[in-house]
Image (cartoon, rainbow, N blue to C red):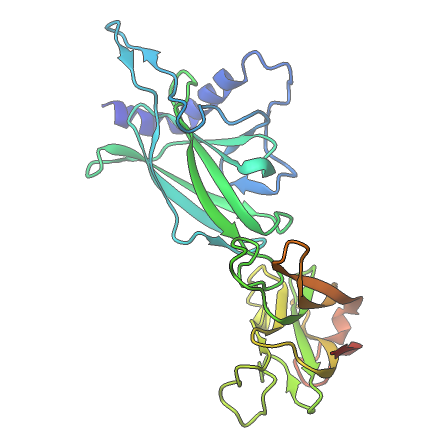
Length: 332
């Protein structure tokens, strides 16, 4: 019966819980829509104050029961995600799980990225689990830096009290491929990368001419000879064709990556607007990185060359011509 009440009160109880949490707060703007937040939870309410609940191992508040006893604090019993690898700027990322039956809402915050926390009502009870379900859909801005991050979750009861916070760690990979080095420094970064990034949802393509005259692009995604089906291990490989044919992936980045060895010779770099995808134009940047030793003795990708540019919509050519020449880089 209690679980059914939590499910049916839903949004109304969310407002009540949010009001309870905001009581005594001098900032009249404590309850907001989270405008400008780089981490967002869809269909949730944003509160510009710390996530309630106690840190892990600190216990949790207990509420008095009607019979004079003590009710255990609400808590998240399970937190799940299909993948713990987040793409930069990824939208529609889902997390879900279960919480105890005395939970009315779930609070969510992303480590030091959030200026407050998000609150949304719990979902339907699950008879098999004997608990209430929760389900959130999140959006990550590409302003969130690559590396390890932690999602904090707290179960909140009808009085606004929260139990022990639950932590769910994951990795945000960078727009520039680094073999997840930002999340685990035991992973060696690539030997070299030529990266193209841009700011508008268009189909933009990186084109690179190697010293042997081979053109690497979305049609031939490696620096090996065109008659080779698979690239030799020392050759560079194009990691993706972002926004191909206006199938928007939100990444707006593609890179030519050498994982085994740094290439030698002069490479010409071009940027081609395959399709403007109904946009007026695009701003882009081409960057060249190579692996370099740090003072600590590990490795990192170091920027050696960068060139920005623009292309108007009238420059789209469907791949029928070479793109805009942006420069050459001499690998040594």
